[in-house]
Structure formats: structure tokens, C-alpha cells
Length: 301
Ligand code: ATP
Ligand code: MG
Image 1 (spheres, protein in one colour):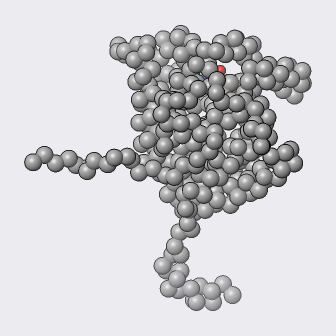
Image 2 (cartoon, helix red, strand yellow):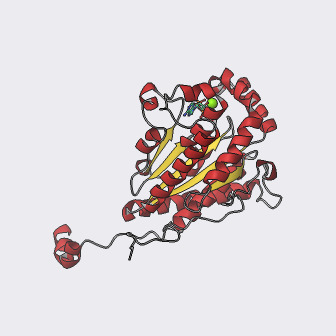
Image 3 (spheres, helix red, strand yellow):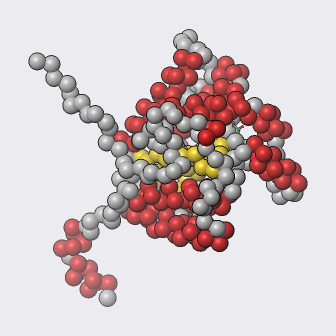
């Protein structure tokens, strides 16, 4: 009789990941055209958003301390968006109050020569959070299915070995990404992915504001306008990437990004729900401490 080892499982064990009206379904039915860039009508008012964000951020900071003590899970938050959607400020908002020693932010820009000498998941792997920590990707391995598709010359620069190109190559990349993230989830990393969905109109307003603001003008790059001109291509690619990779072990959330306070609150809410879902516990007191507690106390007083 043929036996299989290890025994087959129907689905992999994965951490509990939060439900949300923003969550991208796992069945490929996500359509960019159907999701709002504005908050829903029943969203909290300005003051309430601020208060709720403060509350959630405090609770995030408390749970991060237990995540660290528990030391079994890591949390990875991936942020992808068009320029000026508010990645930086959202990251700042949800990490305010968290002990800086407990999290790290990695920004992924055009790959270096060294990075190009490795497979496309190498550089993000180096930046993964270890157990007990929160890792944030400001852009990520998903650029490999977005900007690299919009600019085929970037793919040429990767010096790939002979093999499939075109549709098949992207199918393989999505397959690699799904399996990579599933591997991370199985090994204790909670993967949450946020697409900050800004409208084309709001992006123009924010880019113009950058040009007008002496403090932000430096952020403006001529290339931003070029990428904006490829808006429809990017939207089609986001749709494909989110459908191909939103899975129970690493869901995507499409967050309306035209109202920044709402966007920050929505991200903090999902992040908090994920931490709460982990049932984090403080480790047991050290046995030597328990046995010798009276003596220890005596030495301290
Ligand atoms: P800001 O919102 O402040 O402008 P940013 O994330 O856009 O921040 P930039 O330095 O302006 O940061 O841009 C980084 C650029 O690097 C983006 O245009 C992005 O598409 C590009 N990039 C990221 N990963 C890759 C990759 N794997 N291959 C090619 N280009 C990439
Ligand atoms: Mg930029």
C-alpha cells in the first residue's frame, strides 16, 4: 500500500486573519472598478476617527509588547499603492506609540546590482521580521508584478535564464509569491497586505500640493507623472495581482485612500484585529524564579 508522508492536509494551518469589508475575496472576483476610493457613507466623523485611531494605536502598542514576549509570531504588513496615496503617513500613523525596537520598516526602490543578481524574492526575504517583531514593507515583492510589467526593460535587466516569458512568466511569479507567503504563514508570520486605493483625481491634487509645498517639493519626481500616465495599466495589474495572491493565509485589503484619516483608521483596525486573533500570551514564569521566589524577593529588599 502506498503511504504518503507527511499526511495530506486539506488546507494549511494558518493564523486567524481578520474579516473586513475591505478584504479582497479569495476567488478571483475582485474588480478595481467596484471598490470605492472614498470612505463609506456610515464612516465615523472627523473627531471620532481621530479618537478611534488613538485608541487603536494604544492597543497596538500594548499587544506588540506581548507579541515580543510571546516570541512565536512575526507580523508582516505590506503596503502597495500609486504615488502619493499615503503609504508613508499611514505607516507612521499606525506605528506611533509602538516601541521602535519592536518594528522595522523596509522601503523597496529600484533594485541594486546586487539585488538583481538574485531571484526576485531575495531582497524582501532579507528584510523579513523575526519572531516577536513587526515588519513593514513600503513597496514590496509586488513591484515585481507591477512596475516590472509596465516597464519590460526592467525585466531584461534581471538577466533571467532561458524559460517562459510573457503570460506564463507572470503566472509563475504569482505562484511563487503565493507559495512564499504560505510558507511564511505556516512558520508563524502573519501576512497582511494593504493596497491604498487612491483615485486618479485625488492623486493629481496631492502631487500638485507636493509641488506647491516647500517642505514636500523634494519628494516630487518627474517620473511620477510618467507612471500616472500609465494609470489604467497599473489598475489592470493591481487587479490581477490582488486576485492572484489574496488568500486566507495572506489576504489583501483594498483601502479607500482619498480620505487619509479614514485610511489610517481602517489599516489600524485590521492590524489590531490580526494581533487580537493571535491569542498572544506572556510566557510562563521561569521555573527557577517560581521555586526561589521568596529568596529572590529577600535579596531585593
Ligand atoms: P514616495 O511616495 O515618497 O514618492 P516611493 O515609494 O514612491 O515614495 P520612490 O523612491 O519615489 O519611493 O520610488 C521608488 C520607485 O522604485 C518606484 O517608482 C517603484 O516602482 C520602483 N521600484 C520598486 N521596486 C522595483 C523593482 N523591483 N523594479 C523596478 N522598480 C522598482
Ligand atoms: Mg515616489
